[in-house]
Length: 162
Image 1 (tube, rainbow, N blue to C red):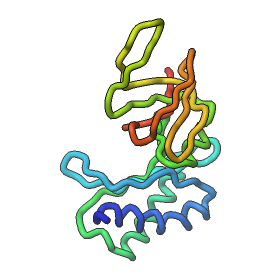
Image 2: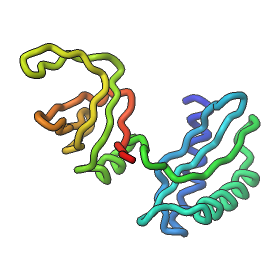
Image 3: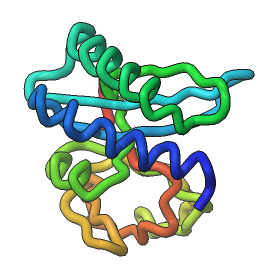
Image 4: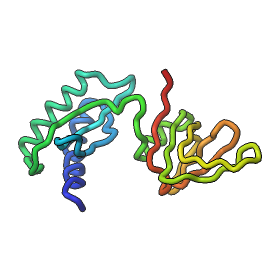
């Protein structure tokens, strides 16, 4: 296991009691490089949406615990935020919550579809999430239902329109 993956797992374990005590949901934790900085980012949510005050509560509690545990041996910036409108679906609980909602899918490589008798290559799709299992997700694309292999999917996000 990579060191950064260990940081994420340890951070998730530290966050769980903080999240539960405040009736929030832990959506995701990531340790990523952005520019010249490493970012430890926790995404939280709750029914009705997360506020800046909610993020501050979790940030302070997590920051104190991270200082106590001191297991991250490189400089980083801590961020706690909401997952946002176009959140990425990663875990089964994300898919469960999103059944019936519109999603955008980006595949690793193009596939060939037959539309109105013509072959069309595409790697990005938008439709309604109808179902999923360990290996596939099922999406209604307006005129047809398609089943995508999860191993072929680069990103799945909730769609949003302004």
